[in-house]
Length: 568
Image (cartoon, rainbow, N blue to C red):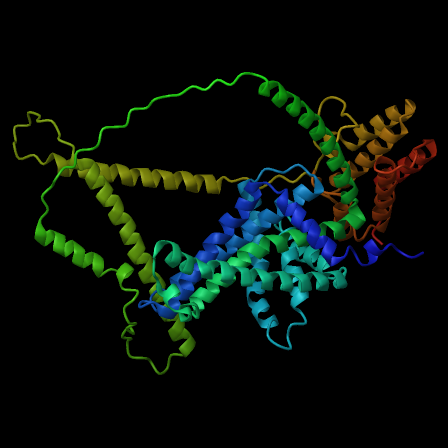
């Protein structure tokens, strides 16, 4: 029997690109902000680092700290982009969004920090001539890492496995996507050059503003300017690329999970509710339009202008302050680069150790300078607070008592004690932290669960409770609900034996993957659950009828799971 084209080759690349555009158009603005708030700091930091390393007067001193900061910004960018993909995935599948806890962010950062840096090295190598063959597979894999990072729950191996499974599926579709992206990216790059490059000329024509860019076209032939054009193109194209591979991953996984059917049913249900709400809103607006308009004007008095005050400033102190400011790093970036005199080299020391020692020294200098500035700012703040405080004249018998010095000492003592107390509380909280509980035993809830509820979970009853509920439904002739109770009983049994971990976001395909990994020595368990889940999917999500024969067969499989099996 010939398989359908969608399962063997997938949708055409053009259809997938068009669907990605519609996904981005209906995505909330908050989801777009997640992407851009995470990506913009890295892009700005990269431009600053590139400009500083190529033209800065103090580039040698800032190499190691700048590289460290850029690395942290890169990991933060990839973490935010993975969160953006997770939100798109929830929007496409119709699943309710889960809360973003600190633990969830930490697990997502773990997978991205372990895998994404390889792409930063491999991508530049793959775009050289005669080496572009692995580029589509690399693009698909690392985009899949962003899409699957949240569902991997902190497991780097699981994230890499899911990304690789998506990469090796439908290579023709993937190559078509890459070809279309090259065309779109080239067009966007030209648009950015024309759009941004024409701003200085428009400013000179409309407002008479002159700059290096509208005086000579050669000003654009600068590596920093070209990198800025590339960065803007990246910020425009990358969300589009992420949406394409979210849809591609969703289609690949839907072959085994059927999430595309559930998403379509959920969309139809929401559209029906939206049509009813739109009709009600239209009637309300029509009723309000018939009411007379009432316009109320409010008068506001402008605030009185502030009277400027004059203050005398010491000329010598002002000159010293100006000289110190102009001698700072902020105004020396245009100065010619001066090489820092180095200590005599030790001929017995290797070049690698010498370079590492130099970078560690520059990093220490950077931290010392910035920490000193931070504590100096705190000292100036405390001095400003105490400047306007005049203590009362108390009868001490000594007119030379220095109240301000005593208060400064007391304030510093309280600040130190507060810092130590805060550090002690953080240490106790870290030492008494509790590991995340593992659902080794099913959670027993009171009452009878509603078998028709969408948010029903297998941990709401123990295995025996689900079997009793299945028997009750079978006695009433509710074979469809009875079959669902048997399916939940099988999940509760597998969770009790620690073959699977229950989670509301997991599908049957996810449970199959866990069984293959944890119940490898028990093939009978895998086969029994596979048949039970398949029968449940056909009845619950399809049109297959449920009867007593199907119920008895599923019940026999569930009871077979309870029989101890010997490893094969």
